[in-house]
Length: 165
Image 1 (cartoon, helix red, strand yellow):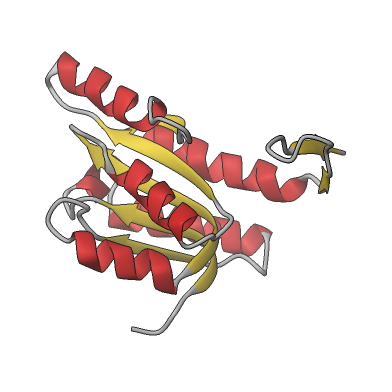
Image 2 (tube, helix red, strand yellow):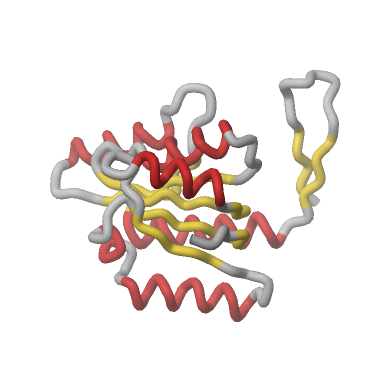
C-alpha cells in the first residue's frame, strides 16, 4: 500500500458503519464537496477494526499522515483512542476526533461516548453519533483550516497555548 499524505483520514471500525454515516454515496458526496470548496483537500476512507486487525491499524497509523483523523466506531468505540495512541507513539502531530455509531441499546450510546471522551491523558474530541457526528467532524476540519493558527511558546514546557486569529 502506498503511503498517504492527505487532509483527512476516515477509519471505520466496520464496513457496516458507513450506512450510519448516510451510505457510501453520501460520504463520497460530502468529501467531493470539500474538494470543490478547497482544491488542496484530499481524503481517504478505510475500514480497519482495532479489535480484529490491530497490527494492520498500527501499520496504517505508522505509514500515513493527515491533518485530521476521524475514527468511526460503535459499542466499545475504542478505535479513535487507539488511533490517537498510535499517532502519539509515532510522534505524529494530528487532530483525532471520534464519531460514535448508534445502537438500539441506550447503554451502547453511553459506552461509545465515554470510550471516546474519557481516555486517560489524551481524550479524543467527540463529534456525535452517526451522520450528524460525521458532518460535525467535517465541519470541525473546515473550521480548523479556515482559521490562521499560530502556536506560541510558553514558559511551561508542558503547556501549549494556541491563539486563533
